[in-house]
Length: 153
Image 1 (cartoon, one colour):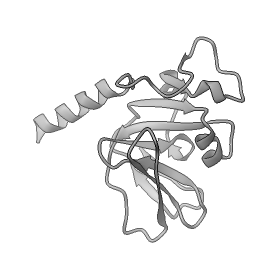
Image 2 (cartoon, rainbow, N blue to C red):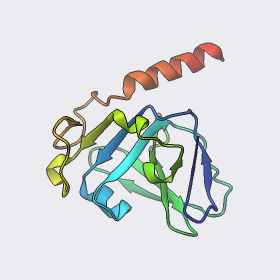
Image 3 (cartoon, one colour):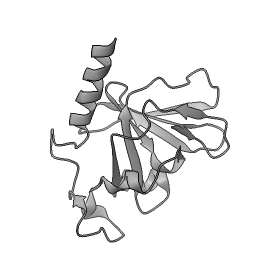
Image 4 (tube, rainbow, N blue to C red):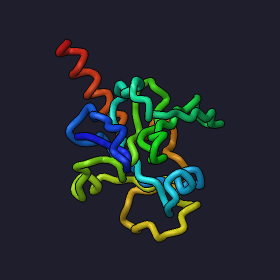
């Protein structure tokens, strides 16, 4: 599975054939960065980024609720590609992933719904703010993935 920017100057090779989880975030930050009603992020284990690519740019922001997050984008076309704290997980922007399917979006969670400007399906898993601490749905899958990789290496 790969992700790429709009102009094609930055391509990322993703570490798994499909994301561990996908969430749709309705917070103001995600609406601003996506220039849309919400942002879609696919969760993957943290992976090496092509930092030698002169077009890969980074903007870092420290959030109140988290450590510093690094937001990577194409310096040529401006497409936001991934944000990560560089430790355990990487949030790849859904619109830039080649091969993301409707089936992969069946296990989606809506967060920050109190800020939503579009209707959220009633049957969807959802939280008015961020996930409750320790309740991120991908953590069990992440631990399983990391354990499998540690056992094989």
